[in-house]
Image 1 (cartoon, rainbow over the protein chains, first blue to last red):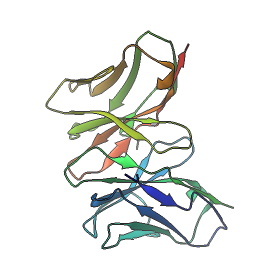
Image 2 (cartoon, rainbow over the protein chains, first blue to last red):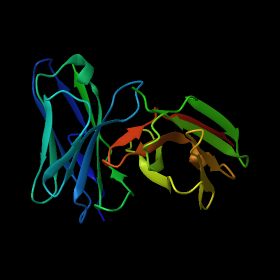
Image 3 (spheres, rainbow over the protein chains, first blue to last red):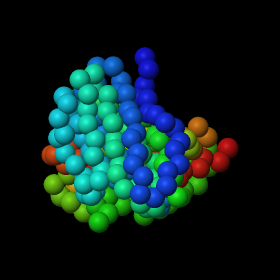
Image 4 (tube, helix red, strand yellow):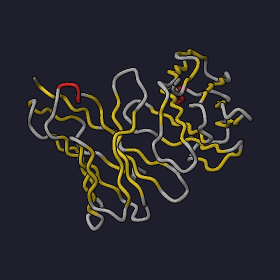
Length: 112
Length: 111
C-alpha cells in the first residue's frame, strides 16, 4: 500500500513568489493535515481538511491556503513568499476517527 | 507560544538500558497525546498514544505515562536498541483535532 506522497521533494523559490505543494493521502483516508517544521521549531499545525472542507486552521497568515480535492488529495498554496517560510512542509493523512496519523516525507522549501 | 515542550534536545543511552523521553504541556484541555518517531529525511511515524482518561499505555518495548496533575508525559523504551536512534516528538491534541508538537528529542542508543 502506498503511503502519503508529497511533491515536489525539494523546491527553491524567490521571495515574493508563489508556491504550490501537493499531497496524496493513503487510500481510504479522508483527512489531510499540513504542518510546517522550521529550523529549531516543533511541528506547527497549518491546516486540516476533511471531506473536501477546511476543518481547522493554525496560526498562520492568510497567504497560507489550500484545498482538498474530491479524491482527497490536497494542495497547500503559499503566496508572497518570505524568507522565514523556508521550512520542511509535512502532510499527514488519517481516517476521520483514527488518530494513527501517517506522515509523508515532506517538501523542503527554500526561499532566497 | 509553545504549548508542548520537550526540554531535552538530545539523549544518549547504552543499548539494553532504559530510554526515558519527557514532555510537558501547558493546556489542561488537551485530551489525547501521541509520540512520533522521525528518522532523517523521513516524515514522523506514529509510535504510541494515550488518552487523557488513562495514565499508562504499553505497546511492546514502548510505554507512555501521563501525569495530568503535573501536565507531564513520558515515553519509556525498554530495552533500548540502536535502531531506536531517531528524533522523538510528543504531540497533544485538542478537541478541534489540532495538533501541538514539541520540538523533539534526539535519542542516540549506543551499541
